[in-house]
Structure formats: C-alpha cells, structure tokens
Image (cartoon, rainbow, N blue to C red; front, side, top):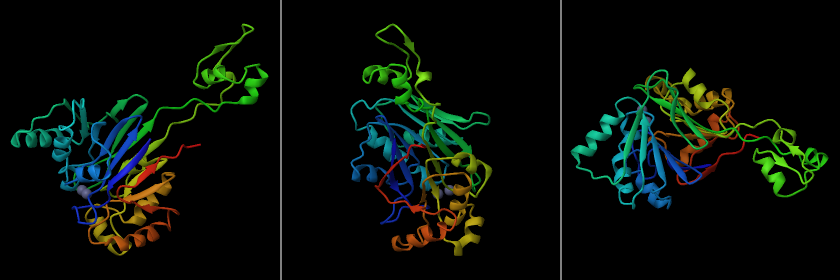
Length: 307
Ligand SMILES: [Zn+2]
Ligand SMILES: [Zn+2]
C-alpha cells in the first residue's frame, strides 16, 4: 500500500499548487480521497492511470474537494471497460454528482454506486483485506475524516520454534507462515499457532482535512502509520483558522501527536503561502510533531508497517 499526493492546496487551485487529493494504491486497486478542480491533470502528469480507480472517498461538499469529480469520471470513461466505481461521502453527494452528469449529458461506460454517511454506520467501504471507516469532523459544513485499515496480518514466524518441531526449511514453513497447518513427513501435524507469534495489526492510513481539532479527528487519526492532515494556516493566522473552522499546522501536529500517528504529512495549504513559505509551516508544527513534513505534489508516500 502506498499513497501518491496529487495536490496539496486548499480553497482553490493555484498555478503552483492543485487542491488536496490523495491517491491510495493497494494490490492493484486505487482509492482517491477528494477531487478538486483539474485534479485529473495530476493523474496524467504523474502517469498514474485511471483504470484501476475503484472508489472515490469525499470529505465534504466544498468546491475545492468535489469540483474535480466530473473531470475524473470523464477521464475514466475514456478507458476500455473500466469496471464499476463507488463514490462515498457526505449526504447530498449523490445528488450533486448525478445532477452534474445529467445536466452535462455525460455518458459513462461503467456503473456508478454511492454510499452516503449515516449515523451509526461507521464503515464506508470494504474490499479484500481493507476497511474504510469515516468519522464526522468539525467544519463549517458537514465533513468526514477517513481511516483506511488493512486486515490483521499473521504473526511473526519463529524459525527456532519451527526447527525444534522438526519443520524443515522450505515450502512447509511458507504454508505455516500463511496461517495454514501442515503434516510433516513422519505424519505429525504442526499448526500455525505453534510457530507464529501473535497476529499483527495491518497498516492504517488516515486522511482528514477541513476541521477543528475534535474527537472525530482523534478517532480518524488513532495510531495511523501515515496520516494526511490539513495544516492550512501558520500560527500568526490562528484566529482566522478558528473562525473558518480550519487548523493551523501546529494544531494539526498536536492532534496527530496525541493520536499516536507515526508519519504526518500536512496538506490543504492556504493559497496565501508561497511554496517557499511552506518550510515555516513544517517548522512551527515540528514543535509538537518532530519530523512532520509538508506534502509534495506527485510524491509517493510509503505506508510503514507498524512493526
Ligand atoms: Zn477545503
Ligand atoms: Zn471546506
């Protein structure tokens, strides 16, 4: 699993910074978080393709997060039989997309399905080995943070235990490592629990932008191995951040540190800051989260394994 950052800005696309959007790739499947104006340009520029895009997860119905959806759908409709696409997000999202498609007389060569957030349904999407959860945040309109969890992995293989049980190096050990029992040449049975440590949790990737610090943000970020979080404002604009229901870079870093995030990437940077001012945001945030980075467009971020 890795993540390519398509844009890093907030509010509106700028010549040097498209709006914030993250493309997650895992086992041949792609999931896009948010789609602002012109974001398909970044997919093309990065040669990332479109056919594997299976789902779009939307944080909220503000222009800088959704105006790129029609363009993405049109781009995808140029692929040969691209297969179904799921779009998940806040209530009202399906109406917005369907009206746009109707008014613009779009012809799609794939099936579109929608899941809109509702109270008491914490799971947005699920597919082989992956679960996507959503959490309401605290913004000027209803907004969702996301947390993508990989399924639990088998425990660590213990070669000493395997040797003591007489399991020879080779395919039998591979089978045990994959979580299946084996029969040895002398007829004895060895179960995976005898040679594997406790199951290990899968990786967690979080995406949370356009919010004040809140309980939903903390839940979305909890123990994330990689988190993309808005760091829209420098501390000198803290009052404006609070008034507009956004966070300063330092507020994001504080929330991420408290939630036990491993790697933090700041996104949704205000258009008022030039690219050469971004290091200041990282510097302010590093007081709470050493090693915090400001996201770079078209950079690929590996999601570290938790152990
Ligand atoms: Zn925004
Ligand atoms: Zn917003």
